[in-house]
Length: 225
Figure 1 (cartoon, rainbow, N blue to C red):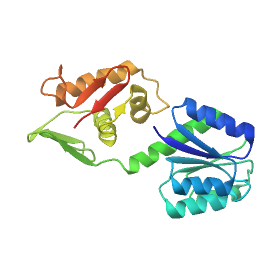
Figure 2 (cartoon, helix red, strand yellow):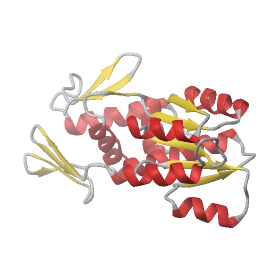
Figure 3 (cartoon, helix red, strand yellow):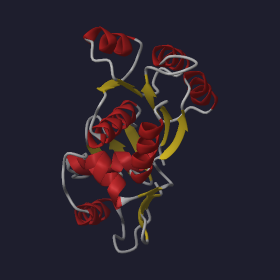
Figure 4 (cartoon, rainbow, N blue to C red):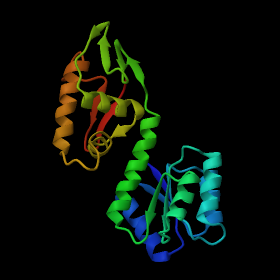
């Protein structure tokens, strides 16, 4: 579960952000002060920060700068009622990954959060991986079993890459839909199941009794490679 820190001093907006992010499946920590938010971010870095600019204690610009000094890859989505281009540029130059002007549609912010998280995941994705007698190169999109080439589609390589990123953990169908297909697409969870069936036929010695991609009833799949 991704953890998100919300630093917003407007009570109603903070509650709305926490509720919507929690509904989306994130673990959420919130603060209404810039200095406290900075302390939370540095003590136990979250996966993403939603950061207002006008804050008591320490403004969002200072918080953003300090976070990026200590954790350069931690994504920050800044919020502000200011709409001057100079303010947007300043936030981005300090390291913010995105800038959302108030008032905003909550659905848009949720989408921007997903994109920012996905961008970080893409930069840290494994480029190759081996398990059993199978070797996969995600950059070249080649796969071999005991030296013999395997036929996989681009989507299947991406699914495997997600499994490798989360190896040993349960990956839900919705998580695969979000990370592989993206929020702008509208496939169903049945689509995921069909791809898993195909992957098992290619990768498993006994597809009906998989040892690499196993089902977790009611939850999703676990990769044991």
